Length: 243
Ligand code: ZN
Image (cartoon, rainbow, N blue to C red; front, side, top):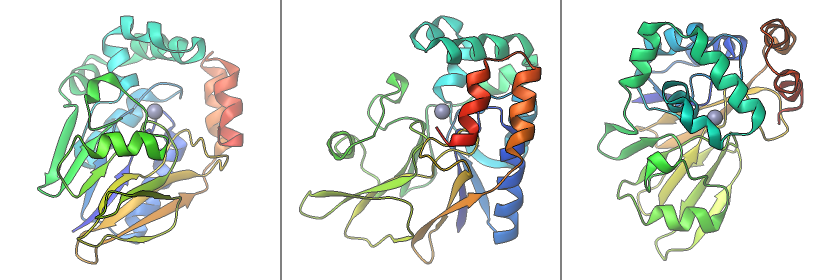
């Protein structure tokens, strides 16, 4: 099975369309979406509808949840909060209902766990950024592979049989049976690793390989739409830097 693994689209339709086109050109069997359909970008309805149409399964992200329960946005920074409230006013009832139907965790098959933020208490939206964080979270799921997003930073944490944790950035990795993996495909709609190109991954369970892909998209158009929508200008600016 070849899984296209996408996360954190954040209402950026230009990036999402470019990623879907590239994923379709490469070829995949099932698409997994790791949450945060909306927030930050100017096309939340289009992104929800497109992902819903394409995804085999999807989980709820913290921005999706905050659009449904706006009191959760009190914990966001000012710009993220404004984007959540802007999105809440515009999302159709049908798309709201779809987001409300999403689980915190899902399993496309027995060996693979899918979450937005972290396997331990996924509703707390903890970040996995360091080897220290990864070590803690490896203790809270049993599957060989956990796919997660939330940090917008592509990379893989690897747990060796002796318990040692290592990390690789965005290079292809052979997923052998003796080790366990926490894999982040990076963000489609708002990369934060100082590379502006949209990020996604491909998990091939037959070849047992995970690969990362970066896709150029019309960032000027995405920025213009954010400005025209009256969303905070900083949300447009950061797209060009990849932060
Ligand atoms: Zn996100």
